[in-house]
Image (cartoon, rainbow, N blue to C red; front, side):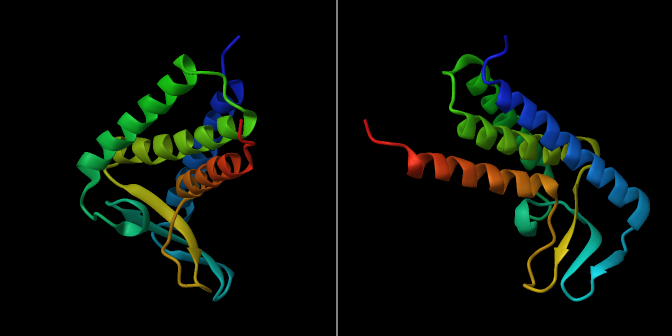
Length: 150
């Protein structure tokens, strides 16, 4: 049986949802905006050659290698490391899915597709991979803060 099975399952599901959502965005929104909740939430197709929130614009070349390195390190950690608690498996799996999702974009397309546009709070446009990374960090923080000292 595969060690840390929730890690692998969460990573597979997360990267699948990320890639399918990006494919649908590229296919149906053609660099336009779809108003789901006008003034609040839109689907806005953009491309990003940088990292989260468009920092390091044009840095796609080194960012793709960073994504690959982080992905390989997380997979090695889950495969060769200790058995993790479920919340840790979920957290690391979400981070892997985000790193893989954006890494796939960078290697294949030379940019990342962003489309989730919360205009109510003037937040930068982002994607499912970004959400996965942030949720993964939140899971790991939760696990760290709720762990009982020995």
